[in-house]
Each structure stands twice: as C-alpha cells, then as structure tokens.
Length: 225
Image (tube, rainbow, N blue to C red):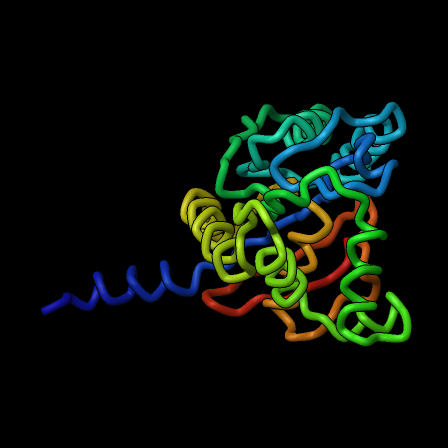
C-alpha cells in the first residue's frame, strides 16, 4: 500500500505544470518555394536566420529550464539562435521524435499543387474551402493514403511519435518550469487542434511564430506569446 507521502508525491508528479514556448523554425528555402518539408529540408534563409535571432531577443527575459528541437538542421539552427540570447546556458536537446510529419514521396513537392489536386478530387470549389474543412490529422492521412512510395506517416502514426517526444520533454522539465520547443508549422497545427479541438485561425502558421502552451497534468491551455 502506498504511504501518504508517496501518494502526495505521485499526485504532484501527475499534476505537474510547465510552460512550453513553441517556436516555429525560421524560414528555409523550402518555405520560400512552398515545398513540403517534413524530414527533409534546406538551410534557413538569411531572413529566417535573422528572424530566429529576433525571436531569441523577444524571449530573452524567459528563463528556459530545458530546450528541445527536432534533429533537422532547421530545428537545430533555430534553437541555437533563440538560446543565444539567454543569460544562462541551456543546452539544446535534439530529438528525432520531435520531427515534423513525414510526407514520404511528397517530400519536396509543391504544396499548393498537391492541395489543389486533393481539393479538385474531393469536389471542393476551392483550395481554401478544402483546407478549412480538414483537420491536421485528416490532411496527413490524405498524404499517407496517396503516397505511391508508401512511406508517409499517417496522422495517428505522426501524433503517437510526436507525443512520445513531448512526454520526454515533460518528464525532463521541472515543475513550474519553462521549456523551449522548436517546432514546425504543421506540427503546431496538430498541437493546437489536439489541445483545443479547434482549427487554428490560419492554415499556414508562419515561420518564427511563437505560441505558448501551459500543460497541467493532461490539460493544455494555448495562448500567444
């Protein structure tokens, strides 16, 4: 039987509250060319690098107890640029589990052309109406189901992987601590939808966007930085 002290410690661990600062990676050349970039990608553009530095300056007053990014080059470059403005040295941890969704055979394809093709095939009058009617999970499932190379992750496969990465982040961050998580536009859309059940205001979340989520136990609260 658990002692009273163990029960109290267990409850505190379950209800631990942390604040996560999700920063979308700086713009890359794939962003500039409107290409799918999940596990692949190109370097940050000069503007993307400068924007990452600006985000770091914006968040300089926030003391990050931990910091994480995917193991893609854009994740690492963005994370290091943000952390450079910190008064204390926080080591950036790179996790493969925090990668964006894998688009398989669609990696590097022009996004507008792909979404337009799906909108037409599914009978939508415009790409805007098609995108407004799709959850992030549904969009990823379309990619998965139509990937001729059969490599793309399904929406559920992506979310299970990414959630395992978030579990590592949560476990390593002290109670009431702050954590930097460098992410991607589509990943952030998944997060917002999972947290609120509502579609983000814009289908495309711009590079270098900062979104703050507070996690208390299993409850997530979203707010803009």
